[in-house]
Image (cartoon, rainbow, N blue to C red; front, side):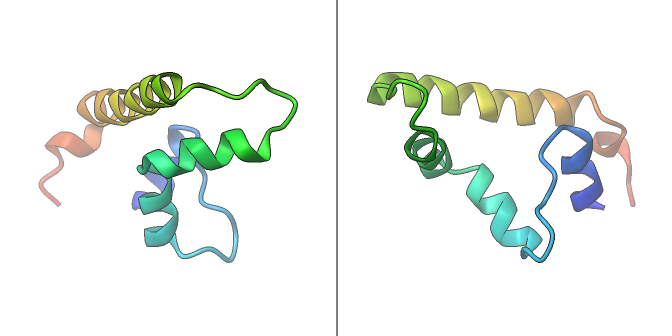
Length: 75
């Protein structure tokens, strides 16, 4: 169910990946830093910009969950 949920909010777990590891990685600030390192075409973000981007991601996760049917699903 969590794999489907995260895919529905545009965070699809890569094939052959452990979903728990993937979810932990996307919820860590290191994932933002890693994305910046891998994307050399974009200018490097400052530590403050990384922090802001991370905060927006966590807010997005929170808002998406609070607006989802899962929040009130007792199952």
